[in-house]
Length: 302
Image 1 (cartoon, rainbow, N blue to C red):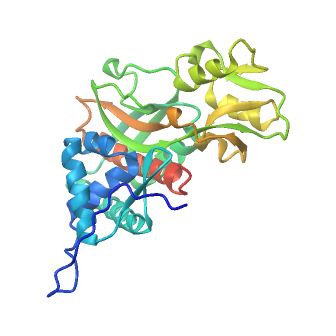
Image 2 (image 1 turned 180 degrees about the horizontal axis):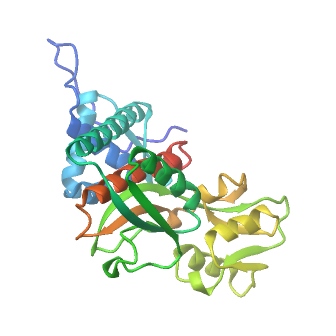
Image 3 (image 1 turned 180 degrees about the vertical axis):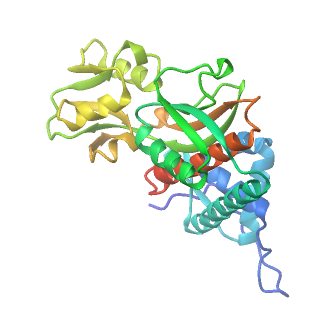
């Protein structure tokens, strides 16, 4: 059964020109923001605009191209075939613009110095290739990576950039959203023996609360202190676990349930306001955010 488009208005093109008005850069930015966030409201927050304004602008774009660019499925706006073409061009344009900005910045002043960044162990396999690529392009910059599942204090200079999975980044920090991702229940066994759960050190995160509600009074078979460890235990046949797709995918785990919409989350790069305009920090966040987005969203699984 076909899914009704989220926004669709029938219009006629100019009969004299035999074509519709063309899109501009602002239109591409708008469509890309809606595609990344999956909703008009979230796109409005990203674009710092009112949701009603974003809705009207998106409707106007669809009128000009005379085709729906999004349809609603699983509670999110997803690109149609025409929308996917627009998103692809927008992403390519944003990547080239970021590359141009890096080149212009490099022409004005060579990036140099040290950057301390912190991320979780579950994101490490995605972050390290992104950091390596940045270092190769900026040989005078040294990057110190700290793996930690606790929230470091950027105000106390424990790190300059935090790369974190979160839906609610602190308002006190300057952030760049890199990607969105989903959770599911995964296993490597046809008949998993039981649940693998995170221990009390990560008991406050949404996936831990979701599993506690699911288990009721049932005790998990294995408890671990990190999402990476949960994935490893699951891959070793220890049971089933609630995991982000980007953790389960490289381990070739089988999804039993999901995506779990209430657990859908985002990856953010965060910096203290005092450092957010530093050239090496800006360049680092732009480069790494793009690589993380490609790694997590590039195959369309989220």
